[in-house]
Length: 508
Image (cartoon, rainbow, N blue to C red; front, side, top):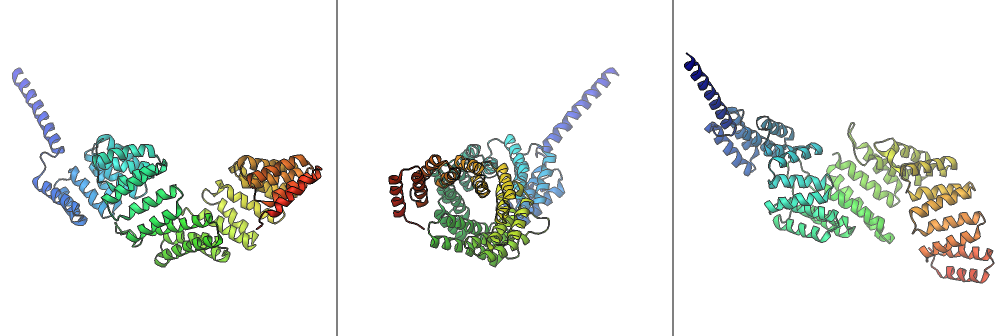
C-alpha cells in the first residue's frame, strides 16, 4: 500500500509537470490551432499590402478560434492602427499584454497609437518598456529616438538612439529626418543637412523631408531658405492617412508665420509690405479651404490678424483676431488665444480705444498662462500711462518686471513715467537697469543722461551721452545732447564741433 501511494504521488506530480509544459508550449505558440495560425498568416500578408480591413477580418477569425492568441491581438492592433481606429488599436495591444506581459511588439504598437492621440508621456513609457524587452529592435529604437528629439527636446540622447536604429535599418527615412533635426538643435548644421539629403535618397519626394529641412533653416534663421523649403513641401505633399487634409495646411501656416518673421526683420518698408502680404495670402489660402474647420481656421485667422496689424490695418486685424478667438469651440483650447487677446488689444490701443485695449490685455492675463506673460502687464501699464495715471502705470510696469526682471522695455517705460513725475533719481535707476539688461543699446544711455541732466549732474550726463554715441554714432540727437552738456561745462569749442558733426548726420 505504501508503494502504491508513493507511485500515485509520483504519477500525479509528473502529470502536473506535463500539463504545465503543455500550457507553456501553447502560450509560446507551439500547439496553436492550425486554422488560427493560417488566419494569422493571411492577416499578416494583408497587413504588408495595407489591406487593413481584410487583415482585421483574418485576425478576428484567428481570435474566434483561439482567444488567447497574443500574436493575433497584435495583428488586430496593427490593422486598427492602419484604419486610424486608435482607441481600438490600443485596446488590442493591451489585450496582447494580458497574455504576454513581455511582448515588446505590443508595447511598441500601443506606444505608437498613444503618440497619435497626443498621450506623449504614456507613449514614451511604452516605448521604453518595449526597448527594455528588445534592445536591438530598429523600429523601437526609431520610435524612442523620434519622441526623444521631437517631444522631449533631448538631441544628445536622441542621436544615440537614432544612430542605433539606423545601424539596424539604413532605410529608415524618418530616423534620418529626426537625427537631422537633432543635429540642428545642437547647431551642427552640416550633419543636419547631410541627414536630410540621405532621407531624400531613401524617400524621394517625401514632403516631410522638405518640412524638416525648413525647420533646420529656421534654426539658422535662414528665413528665405526656409520659405523655399516649405514651398517645396507644399508642392509635393500627398496625404498619408484618411484624416490628413488634402493640402499641406501645417506647412502653409508655417510658411505664413515665417513670412511674418521675415517682415519683422526687413530693412525697407517695401520688403515689410511684401512679406506681410504673403503671410495674409497664406492665411487666406487655408481659409478658402477650411473656413469652418478648427483648428485650421482659427490658426489662419490669427496669422492674418498679426500680419494685418503689422501693415497698420488695425480694423481688419481686430476683425480677424476676433474671429480667431470665436473659432475656438466651447471646451476646446487653442495655443494662440492669449496672444490673440494681446494682439487685438494692441490694435485697439493704436486705434485710440484705450478702454477696449485694456479689457483685452486683462482678458489675456486671465486666460491660460497669460498671467505669466510680462507683456500683458506692460501693455496694461501703457493704457494707464496714456490716460495720465502715471502711478498705476508704474505699478503695472513693476508687475511686468516681477514676471521678468530682465524685461528692458518695462524698465525704460517705468523710467519715462518717473521722468514725467519729475522723480529723476528713480528714473535714473530704471534707465540704469535697462542699461544693465541691454548694455549695447544707445538709447538707454541717452535716457540715463537726460535724467542726469534733469538732476543738473552735467558731467555724468555728458558721460552717458558719450556712451550713447559710442553705441550708435549715427544718431544726431546723442551728439547734440553731449554738445549741450559741453556748453554748460564751459567747453564751447568742443561743443561747437559736436554740433557740426551732428548736423552732418542724416536725419529720418
